Length: 395
Image (cartoon, rainbow, N blue to C red):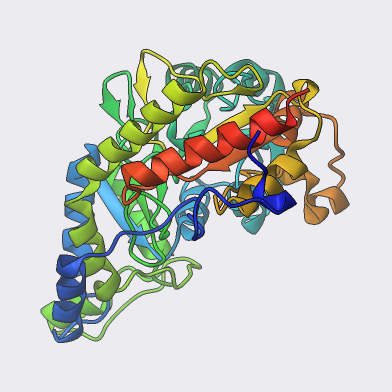
């Protein structure tokens, strides 16, 4: 048996392969340069054009660009009217921003456990979590696989709730033939460098409701009803602050990059799907791990490829497998530590053990590298490293 790198053997590859990475080409650079040499660095024409293109891409009536995926969530819960004492149901298996946005407006976070197959929030657990104080559901498309939006929307309709789809992972995904971004009352996206397209930092909210879109635009601009460019076009200095908002604007420089990136989205998602298919084919007969589930009514956009270890069949736990793969120069990661396990939420009174499926999944999961610029050799390196490490530690 080949000696592991962590035990002094030769690693599978000579340099570290990250779990995710942006792709930037000459067209991206040129788009940014053109923005930098234009009259508008921010609040200019490229913002509106990026929003128009993004909305068209996902099939939404409106898109509102903001400064991050977190600000997209914050703007959405604020525009949905969530306030102090209101409850919002969401998943514990997500990045902290999904829950934090509820706290920003004074709401209370109610975590509902996930399905064991998809690791998306379980509609049955949502329903049992609803109280008279519940005002909204935030469903996360974990790893790029859309949540059970038909069941979730039906629940929301019965109880008069708003649905916010946290699609930070799922730009380019499909659910029941519809593009993510055209389904929920609000859909939020992240444009961070490891996501499907990037603006450096950035986010987007899509909606079909024109009034909601206007609320979102005011919220990102200090609660003011016009922006600088609108006033410049009108030849006016007058503005009104209608509500308390934030400075969550996205610059023209970033939107120029976003538009250039958007032209690659379809090809990049297809490449992610190809890599995921290769992984699944390579690992499907390895009994020591579980590959991600697939569903006939939806197509993941594969932001993450998360395997779950059958630790009972291995001589070591997840930490040792993780370290061994890193030593092989495979930049694995873990997504995510359950949000209610974080010290802030523990101090609020959340205690471990209330979400057994999400918590058990966390203890076994490892995210493998997946991004469009990976070569076939990179993919083979990941396959070889996982096979090498798992075989070594098998009982």
